[in-house]
Length: 183
Image (cartoon, rainbow, N blue to C red; front, side):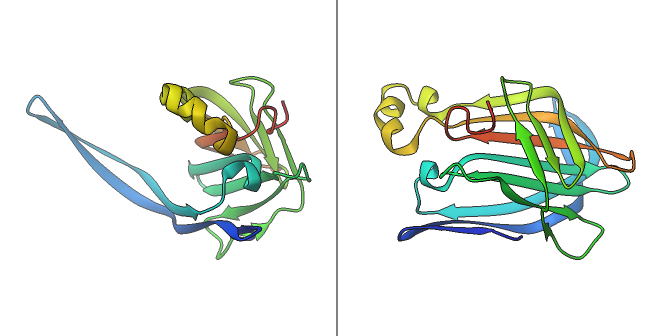
């Protein structure tokens, strides 16, 4: 996607989409009973040798795989406090395109909003929240001066297109700096 590589001094962060959307089937076996579920899958891959606080203050990613017009959205607030950059990809079209307008905000957990090129995304319920510096206790506190205090919150979410269509999926909000997503 556009802007998939961010160079910072002599280091970088890069992210690729390997599979924008694919049909998926999963089998869950518990206590001798097997349940089969059908849905959608998305596969991306990131790699970096840069410290996240030098790359970004915030990332918001929406993976809207359920609906008649699946869409992927991403916005990143650069570490220098510049305007957000990002892209959108209607997976029924050939390739992602650079966003022309982005608005985002996260005043508190559960209040994240993302709008990319008129497509508005709002969380419907929180799935998971992860703070590695808290998870690793004292080791996390020792690492915080270099890695910051990132928090990633994942939500079930719903996107509404300018024409009024809806897509459901997952919104991932990675706040690398406190207030980095507009709080």
